[in-house]
Length: 227
Image 1 (cartoon, rainbow, N blue to C red):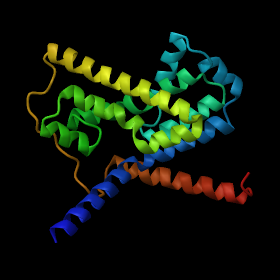
Image 2 (image 1 turned 30 degrees about the vertical axis):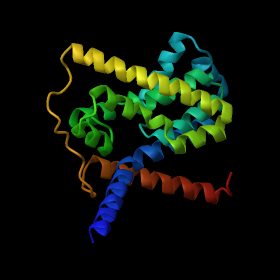
Image 3 (image 1 turned 60 degrees about the vertical axis):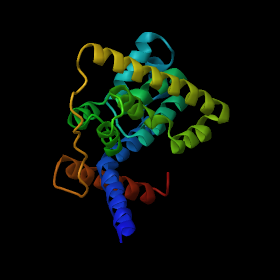
């Protein structure tokens, strides 16, 4: 019975987490479709077509204003790259899209983590910098590495893995030392892990809105004969 209860609880947590990201996932893939179908290639090349600091800062700004879902961010970065953005700018957009969004900052303030597991790790004794590195590493999990391999090839996937891993480790160390030196690391380890279940809040409202949007787009797509 305990095993069944644990499995049931795990499935409930997974369902709750899926519900939390549904609207951002739909938003990200919708933006990806808009980039490919509406925005002119010349515009993307003009805004994101090189690796200058100004361009990378612009890419990070666009990313921060977009979805916070990793899978949607990867798809959108791919769309930008195919439409003329430099690869570096596309990666800057992708990283910012998952790690610089306002929503993530709010959740970190409430939990010290962007998923329940991060909060559990913090409560269990992991360092503050380790929590940050864990959060950043959402972009190099195995399913996303498989997507990278499909999009860019095995060699580029391994390159992204190496560079992102090194950057995330260094970022974790930097946060640990800087925040520790400034006395900003929370003294208590009592992060609140999000409860499972669906409640009437802003997430539910956004999910309903974006699910209706997705349904409308699908109906339009099939009525047009898939064009």
